[in-house]
Length: 179
Image (cartoon, helix red, strand yellow):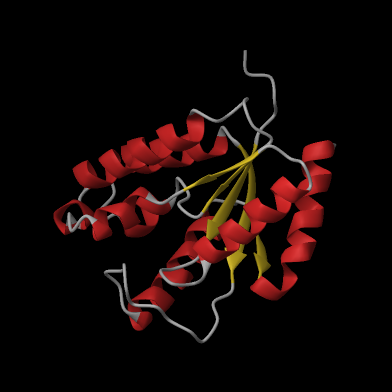
């Protein structure tokens, strides 16, 4: 039944970089271009709102659970929609995991790479919204650097965009989907 070569638009950046806002904007603009588009939300943020902070301790068993939930949320749409836009990339378990084993690291990278990915690193603005987050601004800036190191270290291509250049993002995504 699945027949579409679904493009996964992964938005990278530390907490409060503006990924969710970008994701909503991108999904909205793609839908207006008549592309079948779905937004996949961040399970970890739901855990914060549900006050289940123990699951966000970075331990491998908890990261594996989060990884499996997030993978399912993306996987169920592949082949059914043109574009999935997510602010919770499958690489987040590498970003937020503590002492990630080599086996789990390989599982994460292999799983991520099996999708048709378009990766965007979101440049943060000066505004930082603390609500719904367990990291402060200093920690978020450190995570920005860690994300770039993970992407570069694993030779995962990415582009850097800000909210001001979203029209260029939309144009590029449309070209990728229609080619």
